[in-house]
Each structure stands twice: as C-alpha cells, then as structure tokens.
Length: 241
Image (cartoon, rainbow, N blue to C red; front, side, top):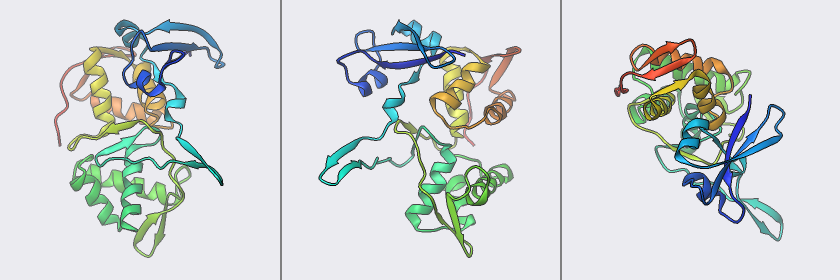
C-alpha cells in the first residue's frame, strides 16, 4: 500500500507547511510499499482531500538544543485538555494524571477520565474501559510498566513516548469517535482504509486494526452508514454523553 506524506518544499518551515499546507510551501511525497519515493504531488484542496496525507515524521521529532554537555531534548508543554499523536489518548491522560498527582488509586483514575475529563461515559462501559486500560498499563504484555503499583496506589513508571502534534480533546466525546466523525463529516464518504490510516498512521493512536474496527462498529449504530463492503457515509452527528 502506498503512503502519502505531507512535507515542506525546499526553503520553507516544516511546521508551517504541515499546519497550514498550501501549494507554495507544501507538497505530498508518494512512497511505495518498500518506502521508496516514487512521486511528488502538488498540494491543493483536491489533493489533500484525495490522498489525506500523513504529516512528515520529522514534524513529530523532539526539538533539541546543544549544550556544553551535549544534546538536550526540549520538554514539550502539553496544554490541559490536549493530547498528542503517537499514543492512545486514554493512555496519555492516565499516565499524566498519575505522574502529576505522584500516584492515584484506581477510583481516582476512573473519576478523572469519566467525570473530570469526560472522555468516556460514567457508566459500566466507561468504567470497565478504564479498569482494563490501567491493568494493561500496569502489567500488560504491550503497555506493562507504564504504571507501577504500591499498595493501592498507581504511579507513573517507565517513560511514555508520544508524538509532538497536539490534538484537542472535547469533554463528552470519546477522542477516537470524535476524530473519526470529524473526518467522515468533512468528506461525506470515506473508505475503511482511510479510517484505519487516520487512526493508525496519522494519529498513531492504535497499534492494531482491532481498535479501529471496534470504533467503526460503534459508530455504525447511529453515526455512519455502510454503503459498500469498505465504504461509509456520514449519517448523524455525535452526541455528548
């Protein structure tokens, strides 16, 4: 499958080219399955719509300064109600909460996600999602070690690595559902591949396709309509929980 990368033209600032793409300062690089560049496409509203390119990976690389002791990474300041690309947003919020509080109980974490941030509903479904996430971050096969437990207190463990592109959260909305529906509403009709590319390649919020398929099934209940095996169209806006 080809990849489409939004990047800067020679002599232009990468951040500006990604955040405010235009014909003058941006272009789309086409990579084949082996990662070899095969084409460059001009940036227009039509090509941005058609190819939905992912940001240049260098856009998310940490900034560093040179000191007498070597390179030092500049800490990234993440505003409240904001996450980044590169990791599941729920993981990011749980990790930041436990780190800021210097430890929190499971009940504290559930309350933070479902009542304070309100990015999962405060019901059995939302509570069970948080419980499963905390368990995975504590001793799971993929995220284990991000949280350490002392008695009933969970604390931030190994360093959490994320991207650098900021994504705003909206109270009352699951961030996965919100991003997918924004994409579908803007385009009207989207393919299954586009949704997978949005979550896994562009936002880098999921490690496997099961997460994306989980949300597609949820949104098919009321918000999107399947019009073919792998195509969906906008049906109804999300409602806050």
